[in-house]
Amino acid sequence: MFENSDMRALPDALSVTERSMSELAVSDLSAEDIFAFIRRLSDTHTQLNNDSIVLYAGTNQASWAVEMMLGSSMGTMPAMGRPWIKDQPGTTSISALEVLVEHQLQALFNATWAEVRLPSATLANLAVYRAFCGNGAPLMSTAVSNLGHVSHLQNGTPELLAIEVIEIPFESDGITVDEIAACELIEKTRPGLLMLGTTLALNGRYPERLIARARSIGTTVAYDASHVAGLIVGRQMRSPFDAGIEIITASTYKSFGGPPGGIILGRDTTHATTLRPIVCPQLASNYDATRLLALATACAEAKRYMSDYASRMVWSADYLHASLKARGITVLERSDGAGLHHMLIPIGTNHASQGAMRNLEACHILAGTQWVSDKRFNAESGLRFGTQLIARKRYDATALDAIATLVFEVLTTGPSERIRKQSIDLARTFSSLYYCFDAEVLGNNDSILHRTS
Image 1: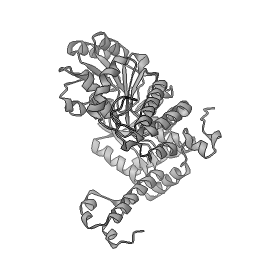
Image 2: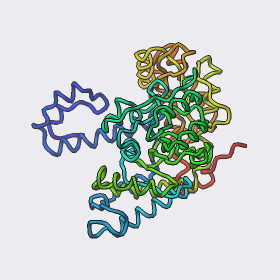
Image 3: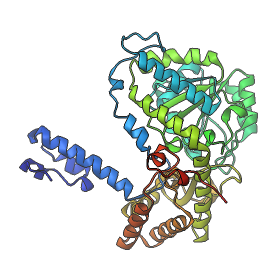
Image 4: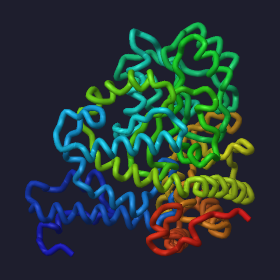
């Protein structure tokens, strides 16, 4: 594949390790060889995902239409300021694009305003902290032991602003807020912001008593919907706004199925007035407008398909959960009617969970680890599954049963070449994407909509 003899010094893209990369004499390689290796890495990553059953809860696969939009050169033009009053010339198209995406997201989430320029939900959370935790006001959020994200933790993103973090009390199951204790604590500490939302979606209930108490004392309430944005748009999960939450932050990939990025949404326009100067120019003096082309495309897909796609995510999770249990695998219970797409298998120590994850990876089943907050299982860590990608590829009941069997075999007997081949064959069988414009391009309109009957 590579004619230059220098390429012999490069490891195969499938076996790249930290050691092999550190041993590369990159300065001795030609620019052409380096470019060829970059392409090789990209192709290998794509092939690995195409040949794997992807259950990792923090990913998804964007549609062909979304990926096509990421090839635009629009992002190389700076565009500081609000639409139509940019600091730079030649930004009329970018202004129009910003307005379009803001309006799309407002309609999808039933919001009054939207901020779309930040490249991640972590930075969206940072902007919200900066806006509402000034003058020494603390943040109340979820601890890592109760499935809080790094952007919610004392030693995580809030540390950048030297914000004190007060941990929300939880009940013994680890996923239900202890609202009596939490209300007492919020009255005592008077945080500037209450941040809700976790990295594992097993419970779709909002702590409405806590939310109401927070608002009654002047604490702004936000919800990190990074994992569940698609379920909210698809009406499988109740909107945070309906529970009294004032601001939503979210990732735009995961269950939403768009390009990587972060958004902030709200209904009180005074919050937008506070947040916008923080987003730009403080956090994003410039940003990649190309991402908004892709996000606008994903929003258009969501408008047409998200109801059916979200339904498929939930059905897939419910079915796979039952299939895993039928094979004797312990799986944390999911709230009845929660409309969620995650599940968690307790394993034991974090080391044991990491080992289980690597064994599954060796068999082309990709999943991640997660803290187990429910102490009844005597496990500190487990395997977290999300169904957003297998739902988008429309794995059917037979395939989900096959996945459960493969997972059971890996967890009980370890990886094997037979399991690896079966996983690859199954992944290749379900290679098409649905609930997006790809199916229309291919002329498969009849197979787009999911019907439960």
